[in-house]
Image 1 (cartoon, rainbow, N blue to C red):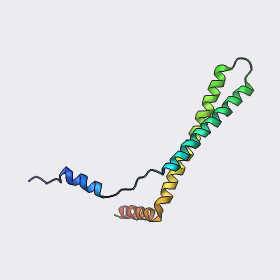
Image 2: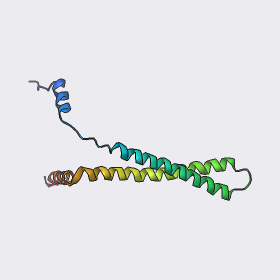
Image 3: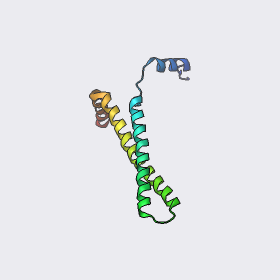
Image 4: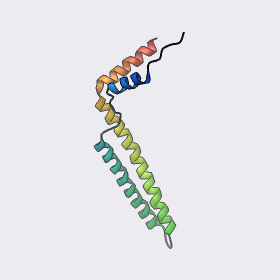
Length: 113
């Protein structure tokens, strides 16, 4: 005997009928995080440039460029990590305690078996 599989039309129709919440944070929160990362990159680049400018004498063209690049990448990376953790925490906070307690209960049931 062969098992009957549901038709593709039924499966797709069932998935479309159930509304799902997006895990993405809001547009405004993502825009603010992106602007913060860009601003941190600019500030880090200025700090890297100024640090090399103060400490280097003579022709320091490539050193200034390298200091600017390293400062910008380092500061933008740090702010990007903090921004992603903040956006994740905002999503968990917005989902509410019911979702968290339900997940904990399901996890507890799995371990009890």
